[in-house]
Image 1 (cartoon, helix red, strand yellow):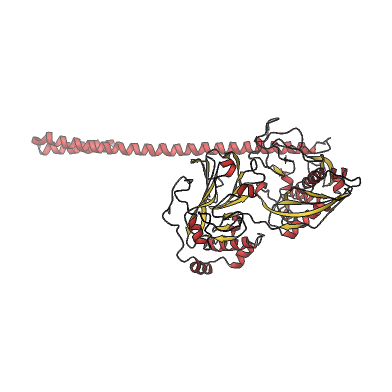
Image 2: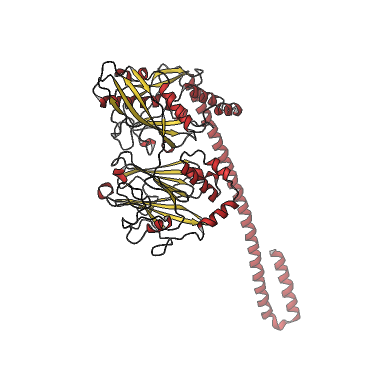
Length: 621
């Protein structure tokens, strides 16, 4: 290139000099400028070619290094996998001299540690009260509380080489005549690591995430205790009976029956034979109990003290949808299997145990969620399809005058709306929660005292737990039991849809006002404490957040008072017309919602599915 430019320059200069000697200086100046331009362009072309070559070489080098690193990492992973398999095979081949499998017990989070936990717990099981926020934070305690697990051989399980139990399913043995207060004062709180993997299997072979937040149902039953020598201490009888029944839960529900354990272990051994695994898994019940909690026991002693008639309740946590009859059958089987008196120390005070029929308890919890559907303190259902910030609950006397406010923010979509934000104030702390519309993300979205993703430990001194249960579902829970026993605030999230539920008795919620109505009468009372609203749209607008209410949300969104809540133009007619035009049929929606127990909830669920055209909306209930 340079040679061509120079030759061209020579010819041009020579020709110019021969033709016009008088203008040599001017011609040379012009040609020199042209030559400089040509030279610059040539240099730029050369640099561009050099840069392109360097870039290609750099890309090739990076790819080479990447593939080398990938191959090395794959080799390392394969070596680690082989080492683990060899270690597992070596461990399973050793003969164990112990008569029971090793079981660890964990104290609740916040208890004084006895010994630090060196390994995290993969899936702790709650029996029956508290689940730790993070398993590694739960210190071990030296002995079990009220129940001793893994000391008694049960029925044969299968091949002795197929499991750590060497052919036997180890059962729980009751070890105390009455519950013993645990490190936090909760009666009979223990965590069982050994049974988590075996007993959390659903009929498709998966593990349940967050047992604490599974669907639940409540049943009651009675029983009679015959006492040969008579008794006058009714408190001891009730405490012993409750502890004995909870021991049966650990033994016969948490540890599973031998038949179910046998099926699960066979499914694990044949995990590579998919057809066989599906057949075995399909043999499991479609809805089985994952955990159970025995409630308070109340007993009446006969005049001569030789018998006691008792009643109690049992809260059942379900691993999947189950019919009422199936749940009742499992409870009755747990009560009838074996001999309760010999399996527990209930035999120390009684010589006979007879239970009565198990009865399902219809429970309706005050809540707001879905379209949104609002359930008042007295179980009345109503809907409000507006968009604005509203007061769900207000109680200035809550927790010794610390005060409680719960505000919701709704968003209008065509002819329906949903709760997109909830903000909770207890004392001087504020927690705002937003749903996550990204179905692939399980990250929580919240603000603590207006700080995004701040420390999610407590609010107003009450502990908070967060669990991403499955898919697009997650649960926040505010535990109020340190002040109000068995009381809590639960926020369930499905995608961007929020549902807020309240649990507790009159001592917790008796002074509240807001969208849930009056606690004692159930009436939809306005802000003046006197006016009763029969029109739910007017009642919802009555509780729109106004300047007299605290500011809880970290941003303002329209409409804000005095601008009124936004309502759909023709909520009834437009809703019916659009529902008739949608692709998901009424039959499909009813089938998806058939797992719900409350007929009113089923109705709400069907409507939400038809409105959103999402059959998975049943997960929001």
